[in-house]
Image (cartoon, rainbow, N blue to C red; front, side):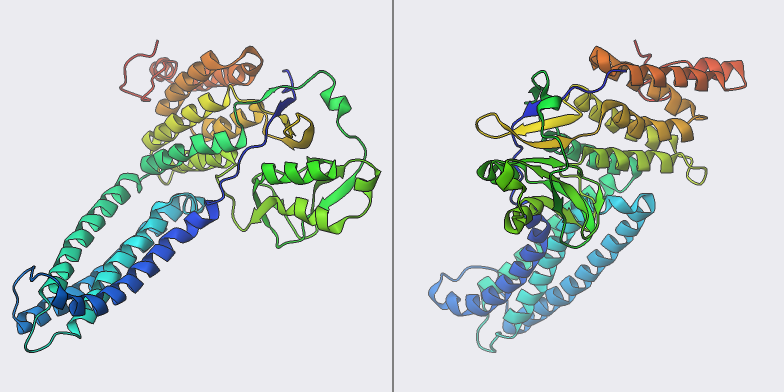
Length: 434
């Protein structure tokens, strides 16, 4: 089995708004409630200078309507929170790691903010109802907000229903995988020049130490790291990658360079170390292996005796196949990241193809050995990926094909053996695979 050749590529841009996205929904919910207070205080006074439009209510009816809206929306917000909590518990039973990658739960915070904001707006307007005058436009807006809230909530519940199943969660993870693969393994890699491994800096170098709190590597800001290393005329060999756990004082890698770069420069070393983003939980941003881990978790849970749901495992294999097809042609192994002049400044290691195939399939092969659906679906997956694979990446797939053949012959009944030897993209009941 050939080793993955080294390759060179330019630095991958790290999205600057990634952490902002996690704060966007709570911020939007807070902004909605603040806007509700401002609008509820100001609009009834502005109506004096606006055309008399809106629903016609007398003061008593308007007060009753606003009170009903406020009470109903407060009750509804509690219902939404309860429903989301129950759904989170359901998803956690499938895999606790899925909560961090499914953005729907962050968006649910914005829905709660919208519903609660409507209640706050109705209460503020209610406090300004006068016996001799009704703010028609303000009351009409409250009624319109109820309609908007209902539409948003129904849409949110519909989307929630679509993926709060094993197959739906697998599709949700699969939709995130293309961006993760592009961020971690870009297509612009080219084969490294002959002797690149020997030409790379050797020796111990200056250790790059993590000084923050312990956590998991989420990604690397390659552009910033390359820019700092270029200004220092140094080269950095990282020894950790996305998904690796690091503690305080852990060595992230080593800095190589001229004599002045080898002398202690605490400030620059800290800047280089800060380019390695460490957080409490693993992230899918630059870590496609984590996406495969999640898909496998969904599949093997479905195959457990307590669940016994091979159809969900087949749905997870659909996403695993799509992911492997994207990975099979990507440059893997050691990458030399170059600066604007083409000088290698950063050495990073990526997962190798045999390891990715093992991660994606071996546990499913183990736990699904007695499932006709899984064995037949795996045969199609392996044939499809092998057809797209370059020659040096077909050996791990051939090993799994041989294992699938052995699993098919492990069924005691000849009829079941004949069924298991088939290939079916749906597991059972689909058209015969070519």
